[in-house]
Length: 190
Image 1 (cartoon, rainbow, N blue to C red):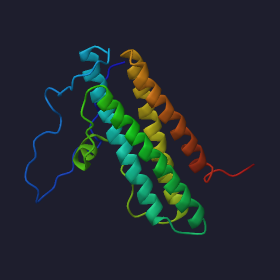
Image 2: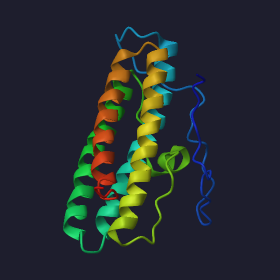
Image 3: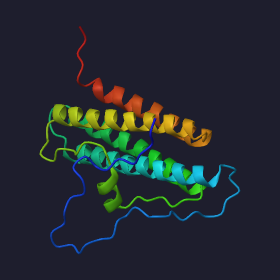
Image 4: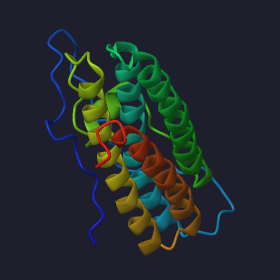
């Protein structure tokens, strides 16, 4: 499987009044010294791939808060609390990924601009208000993130980085649990 960093599906959004910015993708990433025994070339690739997952995790976190802040309707309390609980776990996923980047000797890249440029998650529709709409949009985001995390596990296994694969596996289990919780609001017993 080819390992590539995927740009956001719509590309970076233009900012009319903002001055032009240099590319956020460094030509040669800075590595901090570490006694981690992964080869330097592997660590460079791992760091780039984990920074891609980091952008997507931060994007997912903002989507959880968007749903949490704006849900309305008869299931408000339950969904409001659910979306906040998901956000809390996703915040932990963000930290796990960022800290793994640092453990490999890299720099965690988690600014809003980097997230906007790199995340491959679908954009969250801003006009939603009722519970079923937020449930559908957040389940789409969770499913997309789960897919990218599983791709990341495969990439880390190919690079023989068991530690990073384990971090992503832990995240995958958590995302699958939250997807189940959210999708349960779309399902009815037969």
